[in-house]
Length: 114
Image (cartoon, helix red, strand yellow):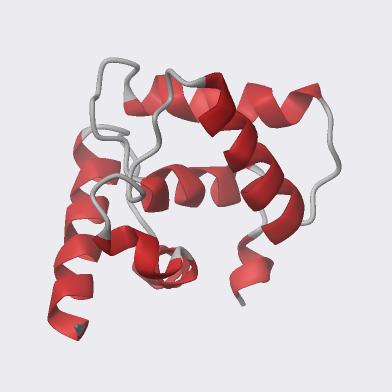
């Protein structure tokens, strides 16, 4: 299982570099990926359907509020939308781990994964 996860982390790092123009902190990316749990191995769950309002709400509630401990406010959805823009609206596969990684960076919440 390790090998498969390492392959996915390498793929996420490539997306951050190539599509988002971000040089990833590999240690943090690894922790965020592990934090996503088994969903990374599921084709549907491993990506964020950014065109679906409900999906973005889920990211906001389950990740930003529950995991990162942020309070609800318009800035949460603004941040999600800004990450989606950075990734590229037209990019079909927006990997959850990449989106979460960028959100952690956006809110400077690296300590959550300390």
